[in-house]
Image 1 (cartoon, helix red, strand yellow):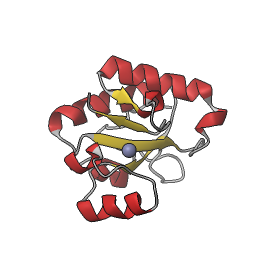
Image 2 (image 1 turned 90 degrees about the horizontal axis):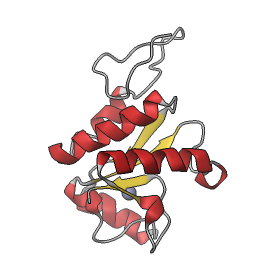
Image 3 (image 1 turned 180 degrees about the vertical axis):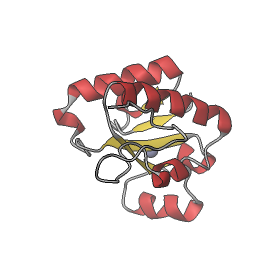
Image 4 (image 1 turned 135 degrees about the vertical axis):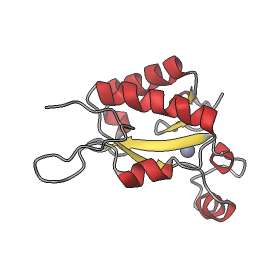
Length: 136
Ligand SMILES: [Zn+2]
């Protein structure tokens, strides 16, 4: 089987005709990111994809309204870097939000973030946010 990287422009269909890695929708969610940060996100995703993880993008850049809706639910900060296109939330498709049960995945994300020079939300002292990476 051909291994493709998350951000490959040639998204490869598997035998069932489904996109096997990052889908067009995932790629579109990264559109609003600042280019310099996006290049680092690509690096993180490629490293994790190379390790066999299958990622799904939850949030890239957020509008003020989108962010305020999450703030109201206690799920985001008012000064979130998502507003500036400097943060991304993503999950591994088979793990979802069960990060606590997958320390090996968290370690891989932390390592990939270090390699790319971005901050991993799992190292935040205020709130453990392992599905979030942001610009330094
Ligand atoms: Zn986030």
